[in-house]
Image (cartoon, rainbow, N blue to C red; front, side):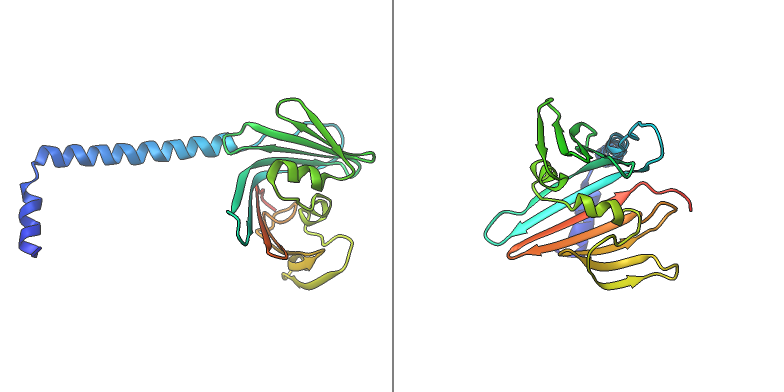
Amino acid sequence: MTSGARVANAQAVPVGHSKAGARRRLLGLSCAALFSAMLAACATPGRIAGEGAAFERTGRFAVNVSEAGRQPEAVQGSFAWRDTGRTLRLDLANPLGSTLARIEVGPRGAVLEHANGMTDTAANADALVEKVLGAALPVANLRDWMQGRTGSGAVQALQQDSKGRPTSFTQQGWELRLTRYDALGPGLLRLERRDGARHISVRLALDTQAE
């Protein structure tokens, strides 16, 4: 088609139809933006109530699992975290804010409470998280990593910023990148792990505050 033909076809569209189409497109974009904003608002988890001093964070997570010969799996949502040092509580919600599960970790082990009220127990939280998300997360390690510490265990390839805070390292099979620090710790954590043909990637985006 020549440029003249394209212009002629464009001029052949009635003005009223063109304006109506533009209005519909604008309305569609506005509705999409509003819906996205509503989703974002719903996805923001609430703080976990409790007495005494505790390390608390809220944010969003995304977990992706890929393995040769299998369809990739992905799950995302929001979380709330409260760690007193002795006990840890982790609430997981879907992108709309509905509770998926609650995990409580204490000296006697870990308990998973499903949204339907049923419970599971285990010696540690990693196995329980895997029941919800399909991939085990290093919950015990996250108690340190979320506060910008490497924690116990051998550490390889440690990189730090100008303030001495870790920005990347490898520990217990996980490769980490920690950025967007605030007064509590990193605001963004990226974790990757390869177990043979299986690749797990995790992204934790935390609600940050001013330093």
